[in-house]
Length: 103
Image (cartoon, rainbow, N blue to C red; front, side):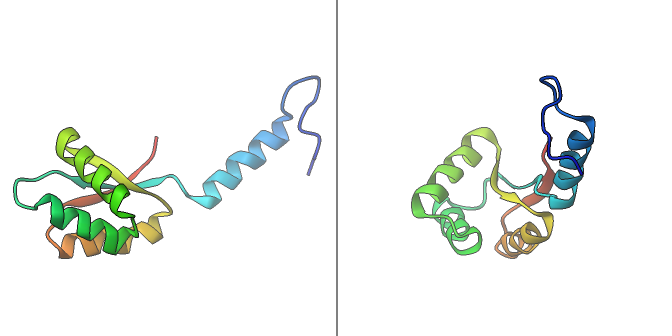
């Protein structure tokens, strides 16, 4: 493995491939998306984001506003395996959510 990150001012191809492999192994490119509906109240969504996603009151309030006005919002980013129980817990509370791969 090469630790010379620059070769004549450019990244060494071997290093680029190593970085791509590390990003793939880390698998941090997922987001938990919550969708707006006409059923759940702001208070319920805020309380759920605090309880399930460990948001602060401010974070949960901002997320709920984005959800309301944009129709959906990514409330959490991370590893798919960590987001899955959060999605399921939101579903259990009647809140529509999905896990999407980040672009």
